Amino acid sequence: MQEAPDIPQGGHIYRAAVHLPRFWPDRPGILFAQAEAQFILAAVTREKTKFNYVTSQLEYRQAAEVEDIIITPPTEEPYTTLKEI
Image (cartoon, rainbow, N blue to C red; front, side):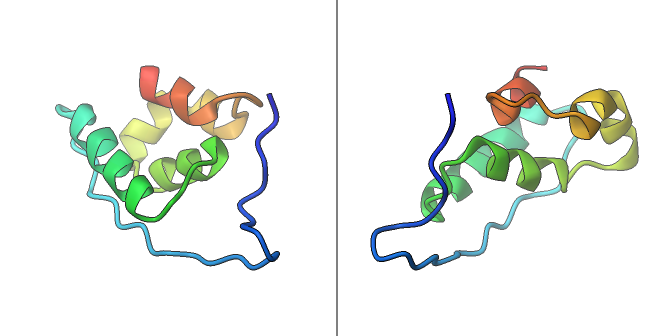
């Protein structure tokens, strides 16, 4: 299923800052729970946008573990796929 672009009525795009915490390798659920709260506050709904925010917070070791997904993200539900790993 293809997602609609982040363009509200009227054609204007408003961006709110999303501030994600650092990734804790031993507690990955914390990053995703806090990310979800930030996404709600900033009205971020697109999977690809969520994916990009979360992958930008990964340190070298964690990024290396999911390198294949980062380099070639799934076309459908990339954030959900990353979250489920």
